Amino acid sequence: MWLQSHRISAVELTQAFLARIQELNPRINVYVTVNAEEALQQALAADERIMRGEDGPLLGVPIALKDVFSTQGVRTTAGSHILGNYVPTWDATVVARLRDMGAVFLGKVNCDEFAMGSSTENSAWGPTRNPWNLERVPGGSSGGSAAAVAADLCCAALGTDTGGSIRQPASFCGVTGLKNSYGRVSRYGVIAYASSLDTVGALTRDAADAEILLRALEGIDPHDSTCVDASSMRDQSAPADLRGLRVGVPREFFVDGMQPEVEQAVRAAIEQMQVLGAVVKPVTLPNTSLGLPVYYLIAPAEASANLARFDGVKYGLREIGADLIDTYQRTRAAGFGSEVKRRIMLGTYALSAGYYDAYYIRAQKARTLIKRDFEQAFAEVDVLAAPVSPFTAFKLGERTDDPLQMYLADVLTLTVSLAGVPGISVPCGFDGAGLPIGLQLIGPAFGENVVLAAAQAYQAATTWHSRRPQL
Image (cartoon, rainbow, N blue to C red; front, top):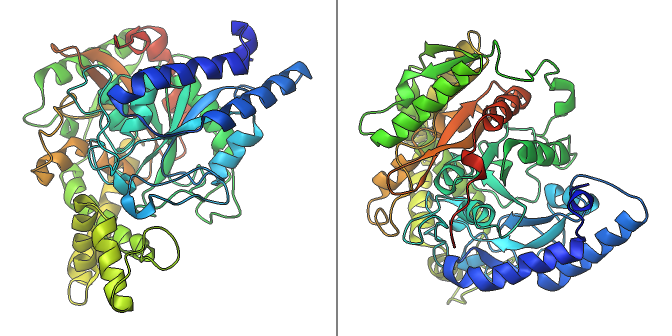
């Protein structure tokens, strides 16, 4: 459909993207693996399907994949040395679904190691740069996916969001990023970080494209017991515009120390929604301050368990030691980066005897309080509107020596992930340095229809999402 309306073949479009990748990737470091030969074969197959009269919104459309999605025959590293030579023999469910629809896979894009980071500086393959300013970070952990879309190195990209890893880089790079409800899209074949938080989502130019990818990816998967049949939960009453939409503004999301230009742009966007007919009212999420400590107990605890499988025995890097234990120690010491080691140690400590009840269990109880905050808010409003991050993209290296300051980059996205509800970041302005600012729209569990409808209505009335960086 897209190709036919633009009168271009899938092969021509793929060749154009591959040429642009060859030109710009050395400067931005977006693609870890370029899948050029197979991409052209997929594009040729898509053109043949189109010639036979087939149609589809993703048929022949070039897409980038965050380097955590298992892809048959394509190196998949999760940004880590420990998986530097890993080539899966099977596809993740979302990859298989896109393949069946005729999408073209341009390659794997950079990410923080095992999706642990807020800047894409933790990758074993070096940092990705923000297309709007090459001295700035693109956000993380899906920074490669966001930068690929912003720099026109793909039509769309898949990412993962555990605590803000789609929404925050989307905000930093001036693109649209959708974090789905937990359980709406299968996680099967996605290299795990924190299993009760990980979600798959799309980074695109606008909310309309994000919805196309959601519809392609959603659906029950027998390989993933946490995945539900979302079609039965689809809200058929999603608004066609913003008239009468109840928009809540949580005061806790406008934190002390927020960059003034961010607050101004987000409040201006909320005023624009009001002009378009939305009913805006203040709401409160009283347990928001618990988000950061709760997340950094639960997520590292789950990560310490998930990453125990990388031991040099079954796959990936192996550093031979004097005995089995020495091999484990050498392999993990050489294969994992400093941030991954930090979170493994933090998580292991939280799960250790004598501390499990004091830390992990209490964090889970606090998570329930956070979830109830959102449920009570959505009894009064349809969506919440708030900033994505307290600040715009920071400089490369500015926060790498201060983990706490780095973690604060996600302070406004963490509670959304802990509650398991959907959120989207849409561009809503720029700061004085020309860096993008994102508006976060949050909906109730499985309320993607309302979130996407609100985002599309806002984007129909504004042009922030249509701006491009000058590369």
